[in-house]
Length: 167
Image 1 (cartoon, rainbow, N blue to C red):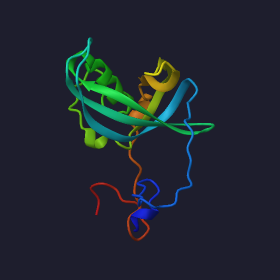
Image 2: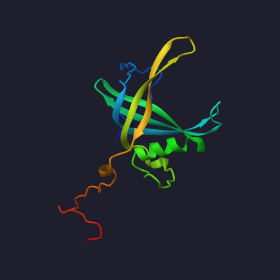
Image 3: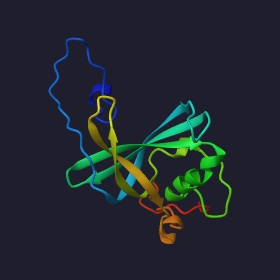
Image 4: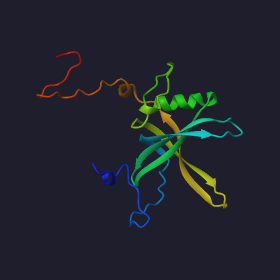
């Protein structure tokens, strides 16, 4: 498969390439949305007044609005002070259950789905202009039926249905 044809991955441009695609900043209205995690970036937080330096995961959360898809970067700080927020995220994507320990496995996070509350954060940029951006306010726990679903069965060669443990 030619990498240039893979829309999800994109491709590198030459210095003299022609361009035509334009994009406008899209702000999702406040509300509850289904989401998919489209990526995870490992980063380092250099510390501030409320939290010392620590590792940080920046997860890309994609929600779909009437106007189109919006991807919201969400920072998860890997520090004991934010352990509850980490748990809420992993519960929200169905990888942690209440009261149980979980070893965070970031390899399994991309592609995970869930439901979240999206808000609008207002801020002032360095030039004094008022700006708005989306933020994730909270992750919802999936319904018990979604967490305990049995995986779909896969048709085997020959038209039958594969059943674990049978030959």
